[in-house]
Image (cartoon, rainbow, N blue to C red; front, side, top):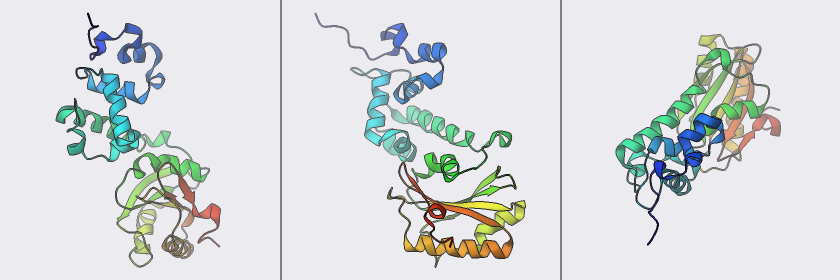
Length: 232
């Protein structure tokens, strides 16, 4: 006689159930697949919810891949459907928004890595180039993150004045420019260097310090300031 197939969370031993583990150990102790399993609640015949979560992460390339996958594609996966796909998308979006709320808890930017950490999770998943600015106060506390432009970031298309409009409106004395490369390779292009040079020069005229320009790739970023590109 064959064993009964395990495909429900309740079929797992109590010490292996994600919800019980979360209650006992806290959410930080759970794997990404276990956290997704809590959203899914049940699996499919032959796969419990944790295994479905593992399959989704492998299929789409981790959390960043799930973030950028259209909901129509996700809901067509075996055992998902529209409701579960919506739950996963909503959970990821809540995590993204959490980083933008609670101004009193926002990080101070002390390095390019600090700035990249604020946006890399989301921007590495974008399918188009987006250009944003992080507005900073005199102590490098984040005032806001503002999207300026969507499309190819090059010196002929980006209007430099738009980059500084939000800073002037908020009275921000400094900013960091960030854009992504959907290819995943954050190597700066000649246009990236040229537009950085234009930002720095305009900032001097407007008395807004351009502290850096970051290019976000898949799991990596490049600081043009650190490389001396456009800041000479």
